[in-house]
Image (cartoon, rainbow, N blue to C red; front, side, top):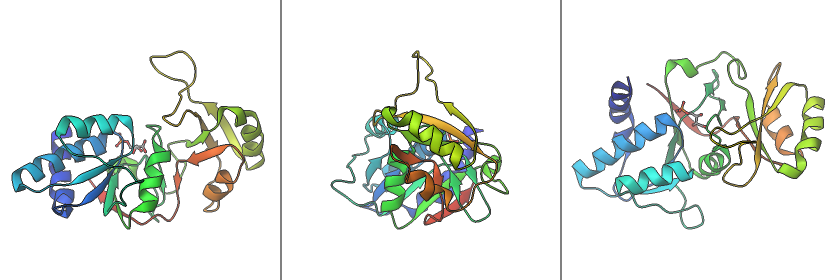
Length: 215
Ligand code: DER
C-alpha cells in the first residue's frame, strides 16, 4: 500500500536529509510519497531544506508542503531522488512515463548521487521489456526523427496523446513525446537518440550515478 511504501521510503531515504540540503526532487507517484515523507521528517527534526523540482506537479507539492524551491540556475543539488519505470541489472533506467524526463535528467546529471526509488515491479533483465523509450521531440522535427528512429532499429513509434485534452501531450518545454519500442537497447542508444536533430531528451538513463532503493 502507499502507506507501507511511504514508511519504507521514510526509513531508507529520510535519514539522508541534512540541514540546509538542496535536494533534487523527481516526479511521479513514488517521488510524491518521498517528498511527503521528507517533509514530515524535517518538521519533526526542525531542519530546513530547499528543493529543486522537476515538474510543475512537484512544484505544487513542495508549495503545499511549505518546502522552499530553487532552480538549477541558482543552485546545484547536493543529492536527488526520483522514481523509474525500469531498472536493469547495471542500474540503467528507463524513465519518462510521467513525461518529466527532460528536467529529471538535468537534475540527475547535476547531482553527485541520485536515489532511485522503485518497487520490485520495476526491475527488468534488460531495458525495454515493459516500457517504451520516451523521446521528447520539437514538434517541427517529428517527421525527421521518425525516419531516423526507424534507421536506428525502432520497431514501433507512438505519438503520446494527452488525457483531458484532444491531441498530443505537450511537455512543460512545449514539445511532443514519442514512445518508441526497440527490439534491443544497446548502451550507445541514449547518445544516438540525443544526436538526432530535434530530439530534446530521452528517457534512457545509461550509467548515471544512482543508488537504487528497493521499496
Ligand atoms: O516519469 C518518470 O520518470 C517517473 O519517475 C516514473 O518513471 C516513475 O513514476 P512512478 O514512481 O509513479 O512509478
